Image 1 (cartoon, rainbow, N blue to C red):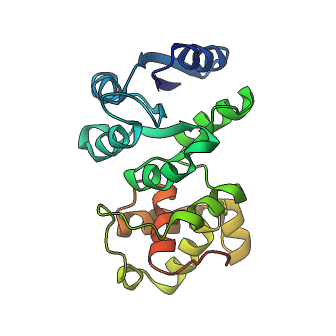
Image 2: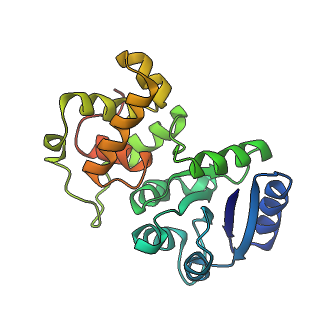
Amino acid sequence: MTRVLIADDQPLIRQAVTDILAGEGDIVVQAHAVNGADALARARELRPDVVVMDIRMPEMDGIEATARICADPELTGTRVLMLTTFEEDEYLLAALRAGASGFIGKGAEPEEIVRAVRAVHAGDALLSPAATRSLIARYVEVPDPRAVDTSGVLGELTDREQQVLLLVAKGRSNQDIAEELVISPHTAKTHVNRVMTKLQAHDRAQLVIVAYESGLLTPGS
């Protein structure tokens, strides 16, 4: 069962997302939050599997709330799915840097929202669509005072692990990685997990950021 917390300052959005998820037998909406501070408090209280988080909210925005949730050692099992609109593209890289596992547009079809929640809970960050990688490429060079220096990070990885990191950053699934490197899916998953551990990455979304910021992957490559 996937436990979900919905954080949005608009009652209609909160109810709409709740109605979409309520019809799924494997998903339960635990509670609502009306701003970032409320989302952080509710997450600490309920420890949901997924927080569906709006970006723009009063008191504390969704990016700051996401950063605090992802940095909380008591919430290591909680993933954040950003709920956004196309006008907020400039905030999405900051959200991923803060630890978000991906994002979904408020205009997405109901089945897309359901798939997104399941994917994030499973640890499969929403980075496969080309539009997501294009977005990251557009904003990855924007300075971020909170960004970690990744200039020497590739030295921590073996050649095979660098190959795996590059494929993850290009949006490949574990199955895709296995086929491309001619290894088993289990071995591919093991490599991905080792890369995440070495780079102290929260999930696959963080690996994409590291791949761009370290220069392993460049916009358009």
